[in-house]
Image (cartoon, rainbow, N blue to C red; front, top):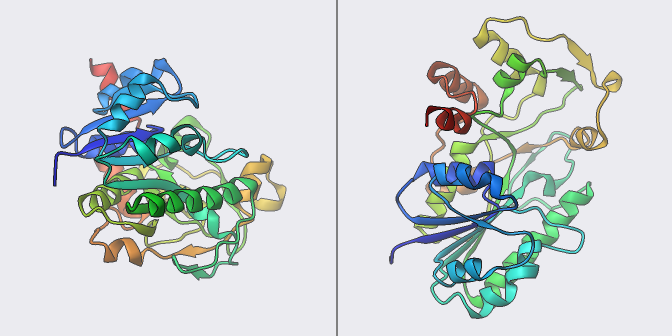
Length: 300
């Protein structure tokens, strides 16, 4: 395979973890909406570019040499903003493109009342944001068909890692233990998103993949486990019906399912953290549960 040149539309939390995981293995370009984020991207090994919905000459130049394209930008009511801006370029001006990856969400499955779902399950999204995700997935898959390139759709569960976890929430006082009977969620550490992406890129593998852990669990259990590691008393349980929640937060609890991950394992990926307990044990022991990016900048 020729030297990889990777372009990330939306180099946010997951995109930066991906770049850090194999720093120096490929030239990586990534977009952000604010020049204030440029240094954070550079620290992760990403050449930063501004993208506000319109392509610039610099983006066009980088895309023309891109072998692997990763999209981590949320869709809008008007459609996928990256497709809207870059479709013509992808169709006609990316001669060395080998693979497209799209970061989606397990929210596309909707509610299954706690039953198991895999990639063959029907998508029956409830929220508007998940309806838009399904449409975006289909649009990217169609584009891949049009240009004869593999498209990998990664459906992610609740993302956590350094700076974003229950340990941090306990430390800053924002942790809550909401209890809704029989409610479970899957989760995924950002390092396993990165690992799954690199696995798929190495093989130029397309398809739909649930990138999620092996242990769907009640959210209050995760907070209690983090508190046990820290040696602190967990916050009291709050009945879901009595909780003050934003409409978006409440909508998450309207979807209950257990998400299986056999497809990404069949593609050859082995999870670094099979469940939240293994990940929290590692983060607590290593001390990397706080924001690693912020700490690395403080050292400079």
